[in-house]
Length: 339
Image 1 (cartoon, rainbow, N blue to C red):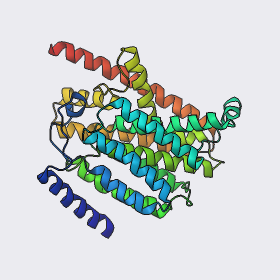
Image 2: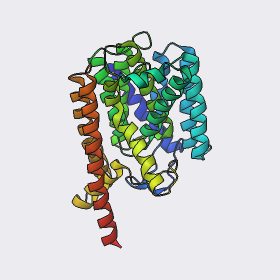
Image 3: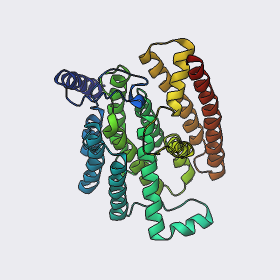
């Protein structure tokens, strides 16, 4: 608790100084950025996550890649690296190098034909890199409401430590618990609009979460690989669904829009109950995180069963699609009536 209080005080003071001095401020007024918040808030959350992660991970080369991933987002936040295509290309290069150098490969799917493909090193490298890229960008997609990505990450790390699945040769349970405390501090400040993660924080959390999960998968061969998919199904499916949705509309998958699930939930709450932006924002996050907590909790009841996990993931995806269709129809009807 002392650590929590000290870090909360430190981060709060620094965030207020950043805002006063105009450091890290990046409110552009873009639709995807302003749909739920119109205040100029420091995008400083990433740096407060980066410091403890680098401190707790003793491997110099891993830390170098973590810092580089953070910097891609940092330059995006600063409007230095504006092009989504360039950011994605840099991510691809960094993730491929990381997977190749560390031989950081997903080694089992429990599907015989696919496992034969994973035995091929080139395919395994490309597939593992693809999974990390999907999670990193999916994490950035869902980071559109206060606390959504932060709380989701806390749930994932909590479940991994609860089941004792963390690879302690990579990072200890105690270190993960301290990172959870850091995230709780950032969650509290985020929901009160003291700071935001920005692209830098979202890319960093997505990469670190993927790093820890794949490490846990490699260590715990008795656990179904689909359990680890259950942990991160939401940001990954959000990304894949958004790509298909945008391609269907002949819209670039790399460009942001305001029709993600969390944005539609926010729109529904705002229209139905006429709430203030910050209340609708936080309430929308709470609803989505609650349902994802239920899914992750249910997945933890039988982590070794592939059939159980596949059924759960399938049910979650169906629920997502049905919910999205309902919310999108509500959005279209209310948009039309407004006009």
